[in-house]
Structure formats: structure tokens, C-alpha cells
Amino acid sequence: MAARKPRMNRLARTLQSSIGSKFLMSVTGILLLLFVIAHMLGNLQVFAGPDQLNAYAAKLQSLGPLLWVVRLGLLAIFVVHIGAAIRVTNSNRAARPVAYVYPGSVQSTFAGRTMMMSGLIVLAFLIYHVLHFTVGTTNPDHFHLVDETGRHDVYSMVVMGFSQWPIALVYVVANILVGVHISHGASSAFQTLGVTHPRLAFLKQGFGPGIATLIVVGNLSMPLACLFGLVQLPA
Amino acid sequence: MELTLHVWRQDGPDSPGRMEIYKADDVSSDMSFLEMLDVVNERLLEEGKEPIAFDHDCREGICGTCSLMINGVAHGPEEGTTVCQLHMRKFKDGDSIYIEPWRARAFPILRDLVVDRGAFDRIIEAGGYVSVATGNAPDANTIPVNRDESEMAMDAAACIGCGACVASCPNGSAMLFVAAKVAHLGHLPQGQPERQKRVLAMVEQMDKEGFGYCTNHYECEAVCPKEIPRKFIAEMNRDYLKAGMAAE
Ligand code: HEM
Ligand code: FES
Image (cartoon, rainbow over the protein chains, first blue to last red):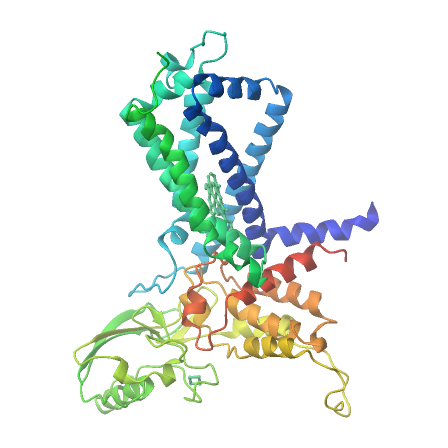
């Protein structure tokens, strides 16, 4: 044990440094990105009809303890991501205490400069989203539904939720912000991780905006399709 | 041409500063930006006023002393150029020009447009060197250097340590400077023995000085008078993480 101690100290010091904080943020950010992609692909099954989506939902529920492992893992990832984000943002505010009278920027992007803002709004949305579709507190009217085979009727819950324009609007706006966050974050993460091979240069450039666009299109398609009646309740 | 200058004036490190307005008439488009300020200062002296303090030395774009934020851009509107090499033909008659000092907690203002960049020196002292035996100089070419690596080292070594990267970074981060200094030694065989120690020590000093954390806006790269590329920052991230996670 004693022999391992200096190494642990050094690791702790590394992770608390400027580059270490950014490392934690990039690793957790990429894990969150993978989750967002998997979550979207799963949900797109709403376009395959009630049977498909409800079966998928029942399968996830049947994972039991494993489902809780994933949920707690996600929670831990969020805690690290947000903790590192607060640390980075605070250090950066302190490092530039006086603003320029004449503000200027040459190549920074709106998305990059507003990461904390987009992140916090996404966080607020995520809390609402879990209360809406996972816990069922905000709309018990369309949460407690059961289909003819006795499964939780996730399909009807989603369609009834998104048919109300204020709810659809919240999802549309929030997912655009998720996209804005990812458009900077996904490319930034690979720079933080030290990717330098010329063949991987795309990861640091077009990848972020590209994957963000796919996620926004996929995630907006669901509320919009329900709102405009392209996806309807089972007859 | 005639210009209106808005210049940051501050009597000392702890005095409050303010923007003051000066008219500069009779500016020739062939003047350099610093010559234009010299002319303004001559007139201030004739009027018995304090001239505007600003840093300069070589005026050839090689020493890294000059340091002005011009209309929100470090070293002004011309890419890859120090402000001493910027000419007034880049401006138009009647322009208003805002001139401010580098702004960062780690670069305290000494007077007017002059800031203390001692933090950079302390980062270099922490690890920006190679240890060599004293005595006779070694024969040239005793250590073969790979050509691509030597080119990379030269690209990084172009950094003149002016601090424009810090000034332009919304986070007041010194990553481009430190990355260039880490890379120009890290790409050479002579820099290998101390490579891990170097990056750990320099980053630790950088954090201690109160510079911000890089969030990949790349403003530094855009204003760097020596056009040091962001790639060196990625390299330093990797070097640092590797060294920090390796066994002692
Ligand atoms: C859908 C969930 C989220 C995903 C997929 C995500 C993804 C990412 C990624 C990939 C990065 C880049 C890391 C890097 O530059 O090394 C990042 C950075 C960041 N995230 Fe998130 N994030 C999410 C949620 C949040 C939340 C809830 C917050 C805030 C409370 C937040 C705040 C930040 C901040 C401040 C940064 C740093 C920005 C920068 O370095 O410029 N994120 N995020
Ligand atoms: S005065 Fe030396 S680089 Fe400008």
C-alpha cells in the first residue's frame, strides 16, 4: 500500500489541475454524449409504433438492478461533469477580473462562450424531463396508462405529452440547447484529450457540429411529429 | 490622417484607471503604430502632460515586448504581426481606436498600458530548460535530430512570449505560451530526459500564477504574432496527462 501512495497523490494532484479538470470534463462529456445518442436511438422507435416502443420500454424495465446501476452511474457522471464545470468556470472568471472596454473576439463561437449557460438550462430541463416521463409527477394524467397487453403504455404517454404545444416547445428549445452544448463540447473534448494525429483531426473540427446536428434533428423529430399529428394515438 | 484614440490611463498598480480620449492628427499612413504613439507622446510632453506608458524594445517583431490590445484584438487587426510591426495604413482617416493593456489577473498593470509579465518568467524557471553538462561545447551533430521533429521544435520555438495569447483568451489562459515552450524542448532529443518533470512543473506553475483553464476557443491562435498552432496545446494536454498518471 505504502508504495502506491505517492502515485495516488500525484494522480489526485493531476486531476485537480487545470488540465486535469478539463480531462474529467471531457471524459464525462463523451460518456454523456454516448448516452444521449443511445437514448435518442432507443426513443426513435416511437416511429415504429406502439408495440415496438412499449416492448422496448418493458425490456429496459426488466433489467431491474442493472437499470439502477446505469442510473446511478449516469448520476455520478453528471456530478463529476458539473463539478468540474463549476471549477473551470470559477477559475476562468477569476483569471480575467477586468473586462476590456472594447470587447472583441476573432474565432471563438457562441456555443463555446456559453457552455455554462447552455449546460445549466439543459440540467434544469433534465430534471423536468425525469419528473415528466420517468417519475410521472408533472403529468399523472398521461403517465399511468397501460396498453392492451398490460405493459406501461409509453407510446401513448409520449404522444399525449407532445401533443400539448407548451410541452413540445420545452422539449424543442431544450434539445436545441443540448445541440449547441454538444457542437462545441464534442470537438473540444478531443483537443482536451490530446488528439493530434492528422487523420483524427476531424474529431476536433467538424465532428462536434456534425453530431450535434444529427442529435437535434433526431430529438426534435419526435415532439414535432406528435404535435403535428404525424405520430398519433393508437386507433 | 486624423484619429481619435481612446487610451487606458492608470497611474500605478493600485490606482483606479480610466479611458482618456486623445486626438491624433497628422498621422502618416507609413508610421508604425508605436511611432504614432510616440508622436502623441511628444505632444503630451510639450503640453506638460504625462506621456502614455507602453512597452516596446526591438520594434522589429522579435523581442515580444510590445503588447497592446487594439479595438479588442491583441496586437491589432493584422494577422501574424506584433503591434510594433503594425502600420497605420491598416486604419482609415477618422477612425476611433481603443488601446488597452493586456488584461489578466496574472498580468497586473504597472502603469497605463504596461503590465508585469513576470509570471511567464517564473513558468520558464519552473521547467522551461534542459540541463547540460558545462565545459566544452559538444560537437555539432553528435545527437542526430529527426527532420520533422526539428521543424516542429522550430515552429514552437518561434514563440516570443509576448502574452497576446493570455490577453486574447476569454479565460486569461496561458496554455498556448506554455504549450509552445513545452513543445520546443519536447520535440528534441535533448529535451527527453526531463520531459515528464518539465510539463508537470510548468503546468503547476501556470496554475499557481492564476491563469485560467483552456476551454478551446482558440482566440490565442488567431492573434499569435508567430502563428503558433493550437496543436501544441493538444500535445501538452497529452504529455501532461501521461506524465501525471504515470508511476513516480
Ligand atoms: C446532455 C448532457 C451533456 C453532455 C452530452 C455534455 C457534453 C459535454 C462535452 C463533450 C464537453 C466538452 C469537454 C471538453 O471540452 O473537454 C462539455 C463541456 C462542458 N459542459 Fe457539458 N454536457 C452535458 C451537460 C452539462 C451540464 C448539465 C452542465 C452544467 C451544469 C454542463 C457544463 C459544461 C461546461 C461548463 C463545459 C466546459 C465548456 C468548455 O470547456 O468550454 N454540461 N460538455
Ligand atoms: S517591440 Fe519587440 S516585438 Fe514588438
